[in-house]
Amino acid sequence: MPLKLHDTLTRSDRAVTPLDGKTLRFYCCGPTVYGPAHIGNFRTFVAQDVMRRVVESSGTPTLHVRNITDVDDKTIRDSQKAGQTLVDFTRGWTGKFHADCAALNLLPPHVEPSAVAHIPHQVAMIGKLITSGHAYAAADGSVYFRVSSFKDYGKLSHLEDRELRLGASDAASATDSDEYTKDSLTDFALWKARKPEDGANHWPSPWGEGRPGWHLECSAMILEYLGEDFDLHSGGVDLIFPHHENEIAQSCCSTHGKFAHHWMHVAHLMVDGGKMSKSLGNLYTLEDLAKRGYSAAEVRYVLISGHYRAPLNFTMHSLDSARQALQKLAKADKALSSLSPSLPISKSPALFQDAWETLLHDLNVPGALGAIFGALNKLKPAALSAEEAASVRGGLHFMLHALGIHLPPVMEDTAVEVPADIQALAQQRWDAKQAKDWPAADALRKQLEAAGWLIKDTREGFTVLPL
Ligand code: AMP
Ligand code: ZN
Image (cartoon, rainbow, N blue to C red):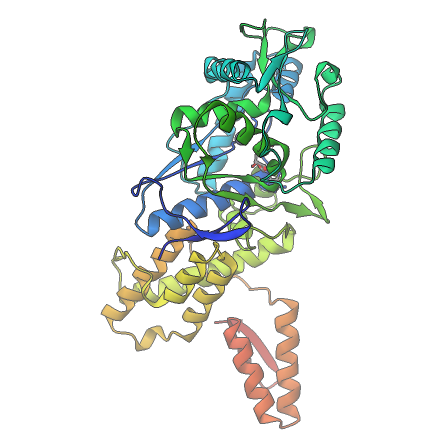
């Protein structure tokens, strides 16, 4: 059974199967390397990593391309502030990004092209767009895409024409006051003529010195590494408009292909009801959280624990819950490993078939995690033969690999914090028992066990322990 994934363009869940029948070829818009990526950025990269792992675990190889944006307004501005060349500045932040990706257990992309290294490819694409009448050079040497020349513009973001105009004029006034040379407000820059504040960061082109507009790099690098048609394209929801809409326009008007055949967008990581972002200053990096004692594995668990299409609110409490969940998994694995010490390589989820099928349905990670805990809670390791334990353990590791979860060492003697809702349920069960309402007390005990908690009655009352 192949993965079914929601497609932003058709607004339907569609099977993710390779166009060439062999390899799933996909592109993810990568980081802008002018500072450390925050865990909001990583929510998107981690969701894409789970998608890739699930496809590969289903038996389909992938070709994963993710770019590095190493030239734009922000990289130029901040490299100058830092007194470094653009190349030295962005190289440093690219290194930091790679280190964070490794800590989060992200599989490295097969190709990671840089925008600066592909300026001739971008210039060639602009040339084709001008020749075919989809772009025009302004008097100052900037080149714009003529949005009115592409009838499908706006299909991905499902925006009305009026809204498109509003969105583009907002973006223009916020980012570039020079855009008055455009024929229409919605037209966007393919090439930006050299300005004094660009410093040494300009390249030659038939229209004069300058640098490419941000949207163009992805279209040019996709053509180079994935061709005119490819399987899937992905980014955070903030990229749907205008970035992905503009990529489609550039690519479809300069090639004969359909561009991406499937669009996957990841909802935002939020803090206090707002999107986590550098401009709002409400961000956390892996380093910030490490200082508070949280590991990258715990951060990854939090990032996957909400469905990728729903906004996820980040709290410190969610990291504590992730620590407990990882401990439960590690303890279950340890119990199984005492019966089956060598880890069998499994190509199937075995006991965790329900969890696997849940995951295949639009990457429902929270549902899959719930199904894994449900299956583990029912399991009595002591009653298993070595062969059965090996099969369960192999299946568990098949699922952990698909989710990219590395188990931490088991913490033996640490006091486990009981969540407030579990404590309240345990109290209700105790009250039912005191009232001799045995069916209610039994039902509540079962409910607690299903959530992974065991009640032990003592002379003084009760204690709650993790299963
Ligand atoms: P950037 O480095 O700004 O180009 O962003 C890299 C990726 O992170 C893009 O796919 C963005 O859509 C995504 N992104 C940015 N902020 C968030 C957030 N708060 N939650 C999830 N993804 C985000
Ligand atoms: Zn892009």
